[in-house]
Length: 263
Image 1 (cartoon, rainbow, N blue to C red):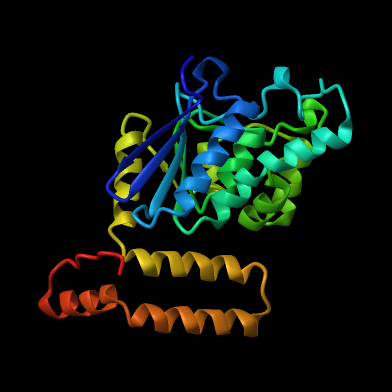
Image 2: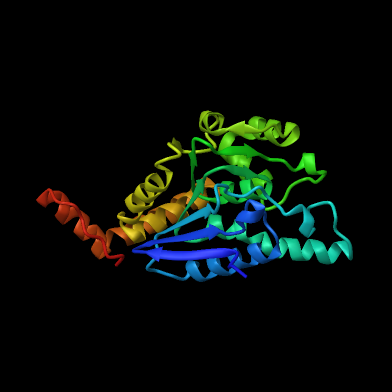
């Protein structure tokens, strides 16, 4: 059988490709567990600065595989055991948000349900002009999983998130851009090149500073302001003592592009 998740690394960029094209990358347990394992490994990889999450076959992910249970309305067995199993693989969304690397969702084609939840857990989202979105859960008779009801309000605001979840209307890339769900809409024909460019720009940044900025932004969601200031000050000073900071200063004075090494 083909792998349900493809992994590739080039320089400081790791790409994870959801690979169930025959099911439009619908999420079953095997795919969720594969993504979980890949993210756990990458979280400890100091040589990777950027993780790109994308789908194969012209779709990002249509969401949970309705034929596979665990959210598809066809579950049988002990509900408590099913809840525990679902919560275990929902850690994928935690990791997309919490890993030290910058996570980028490259959204081409359908992005719905739990697939949208995964995209919303990423730091940045870029859509092709043929991307199509929907929360989709209420249409399937379920309430939602993989963290979308937490992440989507943080991205587009609580009122718009309620509209998207409760009405479950489908919408396109331009609407996604207009409500702030995606950072940019890229031409379909040049989508891969556009994502490569974004990832390369991120990977060229000072790796330790990039990680510290992400940690600061995550802290801002959960810490009181004074405590966030404490963490921000500590990270700023520690970054200032790195070789990368010295290289940034030297490059600025010499009017050249800095060469960061992550130390």
